[in-house]
Length: 104
Image (cartoon, rainbow, N blue to C red; front, side, top):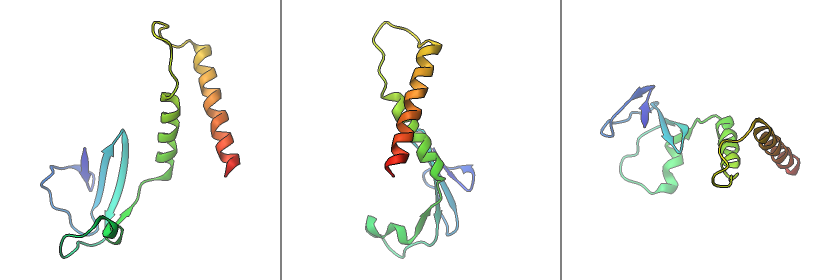
C-alpha cells in the first residue's frame, strides 16, 4: 500500500517536491520526503540526493523484535503457547535485546 500526504493513491499518481510518501512493505510503514525531481532517469546510487527517509527509528527496532519472536518454532501439534511459555519467550527476547545493547 502506498500513501502520498496521508491519502491512499494509485500507482499512476505523480509526485511533487515536498510530498511525503508512505510505503508499507513487510508489515512496516516507511516514510520518504521528496526533495526534488530529477531532470531525467538516474541510477539508484543518486536517489538519496532527491529523497530523505523520515521513518522513525523505533519502527526498525519493533521490526527486529518481531523477527526474533517469529524465529521461535513450536513443535507440531503442541497447540497454542501457555502463559508460562509466553512469559519465557518474552524474557528470552528481553535478554537478547539487553545483550545487543551491551555489545554497542
